Length: 362
Ligand code: NAD
Image 1 (cartoon, rainbow, N blue to C red):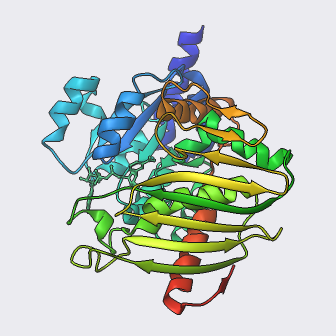
Image 2 (tube, rainbow, N blue to C red; image 1 turned 120 degrees about the vertical axis):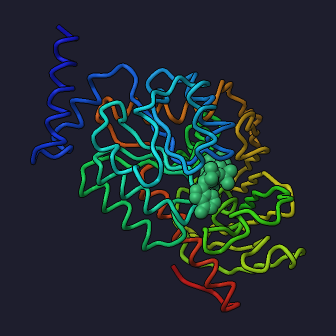
């Protein structure tokens, strides 16, 4: 019976590609019919190779089914390692043909940030749900176009903020909501590492590089999630200690955010300094997380003696399973496109404040 239903759904899926039927009508059926949603990874660089593909071997609700790459030498390696069929291998030129492939339910865009908007919009137009890596895109305008394309094509969009799926991060988000220590007075949020590369997209403006989008979003997330508020003004400075490398984009940024409640956040981010913490002072207590935005072992403590130290087997697997299950159940994404946009709005304001050397209101 279930087999017949799946065959029927597959048939109408094929029919849908060749008739005026839109994928919008078909999606809920194809998604619900499968125990594991098929994921296509777009861009097979560090994050796909080292983190996402291995995590997709641990997931319950989704699996790696397809790859999209501009590097032909990677294809046999990935096919052999993950059993990817010839028909599920795409180049950037053949990418749009994913529309005709019922094996693919979700496209995960893991490309340099300047390519996120184009590959998200093309996936949405092909009728596929989209998971897009952070930073969502280099500009607010790009983020808005991505959200619109997904809404127009009735597919869901999620941003790869893995930390929001981590129970340790969810613990301090709960404090923001329940306010056991009263309101936030002031916080410090920092995210950085030493990047020794000189010629990567992270140092290239046109490809969406710069530390603000890359690591700065973690510092912004810390401030926004710990207050539960959106900033209303920004003061900022950007600078570099390696001008021979960081001449197009900033290596380090320091910025202050003011929130409607009066809370202030001091944020730091860098490609030259390793730092990873969040320290929040409330009216009647404090909370400290260190590390705060790592792949594993994020942990913290609070002034009342509470320890935050939840076990998490694999953060990326949890993220993708949460998102795949939400798709199967037709529920909202935990981290939708609108959340990525909120951070990019702050990133744009930080750039503006640094350029003007003055307060920028949001
Ligand atoms: P990477 O440089 O290792 O990989 C990028 C991939 O894009 C490569 O396979 C490269 O071949 C491909 N590509 C296609 N066109 C390109 C072009 N014109 N220039 C450069 N590369 C091109 O980068 P990465 O570290 O895997 O990052 C990819 C995305 O994943 C970024 O958005 C990054 O911020 C994000 N990321 C997220 C996390 C996280 O914790 N959520 C961690 C690492 C990276």
